[in-house]
Image 1 (cartoon, rainbow, N blue to C red):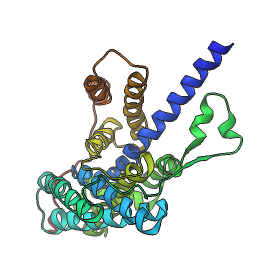
Image 2 (image 1 turned 180 degrees about the vertical axis):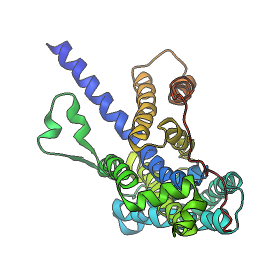
Image 3 (image 1 turned 135 degrees about the vertical axis):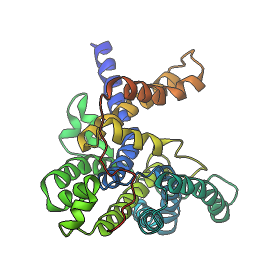
Image 4 (image 1 turned 90 degrees about the horizontal axis):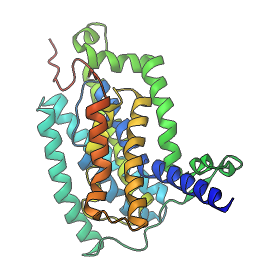
Amino acid sequence: MEVSNTILQIISSFIEADLRVAAPILIAAIGLLYMEKAGVVNIGAEGTMLIGALAGSIGAYLFQNPWMGALVAALAGGLVGVMFAYLVVTVKANQIVAGIAINILALGGTTTVNRIFFGLNASSSDIPSFTKVAIPLLSEIPVIGSLFNQLGLAYLAILMVPFTYYLMKKTTIGLSIRSVGEHPESADTAGINVFRIRYGTIIIGSMIIGVAGAYLSVGLLSFFSENMVSGRGYIALASVIFGKWNAFGVLGATLLFGFGDALQIRMQAIGSAIPYQFLLMLPYLLTVAAWSGFVGKAVAPKASGKPYFKG
């Protein structure tokens, strides 16, 4: 009986860790999904998350409230979105190049601002962080009850999935976004403002990505460290493709990465003989292997990555 209970506790802990580490990638992927549906490719999610992580830690430190930190991160992400939207929608710059520029700017900019604000240390120890919120009754269910004992932002991440699916599939706004991503010329002829839709999705999507960054600095941790995003922005973009531009598909893709990350954490905890460098590679290798072997034919919106020139 004791062995059985121990196994159940391990499984429950693993499920909890999977969702906890997958949540920031899920939030970022949902933000990217809004842009992708409108025909915008943004590989600058890595940089936007990093800016959101720093803004979240500063906001939480100044206001002594992690939710205020998330709000500041959203605003910072929105500002990045305005800049990116201006480059790719108004100036019609190459979307890939603009995204790379944001990543480079974020890496150097956050390092500088962090050292100015917090000094040479990683961050202040006085930054409040999110705590777990247990849902009564549901959190007491054996094994899966750990799914209902998560950080507040993790619940938000899960709720965003059905909301985004419904918005894209069942509403006029979603139809307009999808029309712009598939046939912007036809959408323009039908009276849909292509520029406004793309600006809106980029700014809102970037705000969501900023919150994903705050999840890292005031959720998983309680401090900011340089380049702490560690490729999660790229994984979020891959998750959108792996999920075939569907909110529920994106959820499955991010949970797969979370599985790999949770697995390597557990293997390090039990003292696995495998070098930790290889264990750190595990979630990325697992995601790439799954994406390469099981994604099948994934068809992006037809206008994806293409600037729109009003005729």
